Image (cartoon, rainbow, N blue to C red; front, side, top):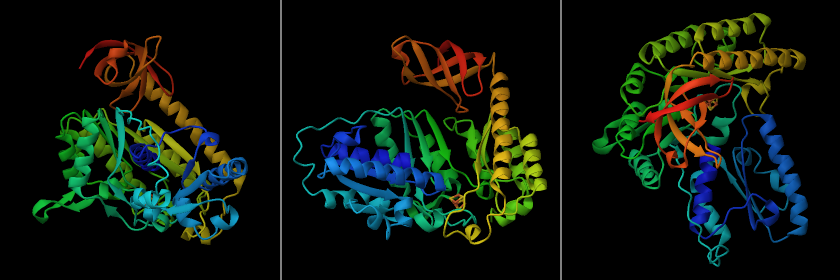
Length: 416
Ligand code: SF4
């Protein structure tokens, strides 16, 4: 979501004559768009502000905007620690970011003569909702982003049509909990996430639709049916599990059991046999015993994941879980994480190896000067093959000839 927000604000600045640079040393304005989900993300933002402080000494005119979830969480204290920050925009105000920025910048950008054209993006992200009210006990998002707020259907569809006209072929619908999307449509009918997917499926120029992230408790049969019947919806779902232990899931306030998750995963696989399922797993949540962790390993064995993202529990100040003891010792968390990371590698390698000899639909995203084309399959796997530059932006059929844990190799068969 931060990538999408940053891209939108970048676009806004470009439309006002701004020019992007990767070097803070060259910038008149630096926007630090932050994440608060894990402590590590906040440490990174703080250390970046430390580096900006040194640049600011040499370039006192440079303006610094601190934005996003961490900005929401520490908005009272951050300017005391880094007084050079000119503007703080918390996550709850992010939808008004362009207006806040315009007010702050005044005529700073209007003076510029350069108007850079936006680069057409083959793949684009779009936020369809903000906030979350699930209150998982370890998560700071409901506090920093506030309650769920779905965007109006017509606004989303208009944005996607604009993206398609600018060259986007694949769109990813984003939200903290996309599958609980709900909005009033025309004639006061209620549009849910499945209805929205069907509408996006009908937009000319868009070839592929992805979405994330989903909460297992909100995944209903209508959505499974919609995924299997909408040709443009890709064969990939990210479905965070977090733990295979019912005790830990209850302590996390996840509102499903390991059995519920397994039933859902089986239903999805039955309806869409080519579907790739990826997941998030957290280790070391307070109270997690060896038996709880063994339950997580068991469900991994039974779910046929394509990949899993593993994380160590990190207490986030202000969450219910952080009010208790961080009871799993560090070495135990690291031991469990190492086991999961090894599992992730071997699962990915095994699943990719099974694809050798199959034909995969690929959206070609890049072609290097030496003729190596790269893109992703419908199941979101990276694949490389020999191809010409005119293939960029097209859907092609590729025969898989080789595999590694994190990518495939193939040969061009035909255009789709
Ligand atoms: S569903 Fe849970 S983990 Fe995800 S954003 Fe909401 S509270 Fe956080």
